[in-house]
Image (tube, rainbow, N blue to C red; front, side, top):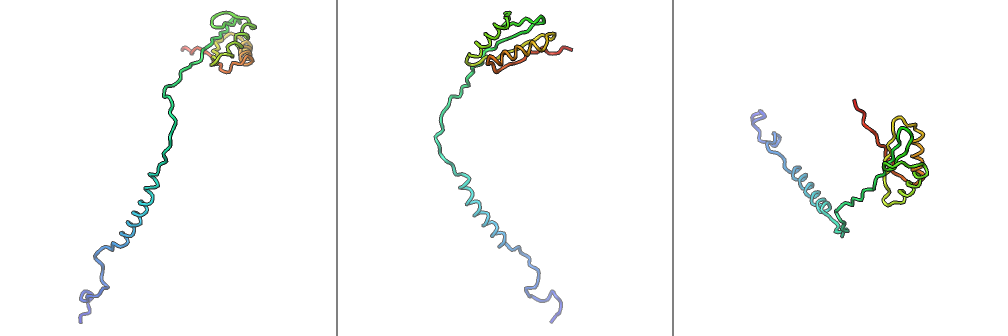
Length: 139
């Protein structure tokens, strides 16, 4: 009849082992989730794709160099042309396929109005690609 708490053999004492039931329940739920999702992830549709050539077409358009010199002379590929000849050459170049790229090189001392005239002639003639050629600044 000892009244000490260590003397009784009741179930009121501390549990010394881990309860595995909740851990097993969680593992089974995860197993079921993975079993359901893996076939969905691996699902593939077989389709017949068209075949294409892997070679890149390299049809580079021609370049037309137009220069405006300091005295106002317009050069088409290093040959002096008048404004009427320039418009005719631009119209002829616009008909080419692929359309050439106009590279405009103007002298620093030329008035912007002359450059704008050449640009408007190119636009009116149908040329859509105009590039400006500049000289790098030397220090």
